Image 1: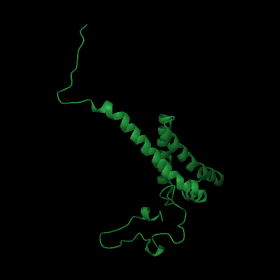
Image 2: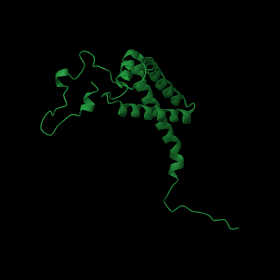
Image 3: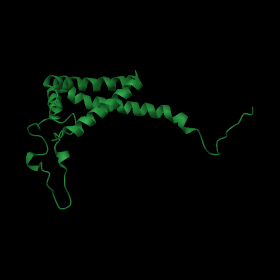
Image 4: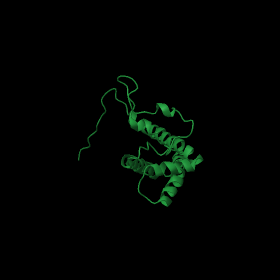
Length: 153
């Protein structure tokens, strides 16, 4: 049997094998930072997070809404911390993808206008922008703001 040798074209280097470990580490750490930054405001204000979950109007019992509202931020925080440490990276990445899909699905199905798990059911007093400017009408000719983006306030 003859052995075939494959040569790379001149000038081409093997950049991917050298780059891939660094790129995957940077992306893993970026995902970890996203999880931690998303979790921290929820962990510090669990009541607001419960109201946010309730605003999705998922049709589940209130007890389960409270369990999700309390558990979700801690799950996000644990995902972020484990991704930083590097424990169970593939499992944590799969859990991250699953959590993204679940929250995206809940957001698209809810119809409640909630724009994410950090959105409060009602805006806090003195929030920005003032209530008088929260409108879905055009601000000036050719400029409009979608109702979806305004439902976050």
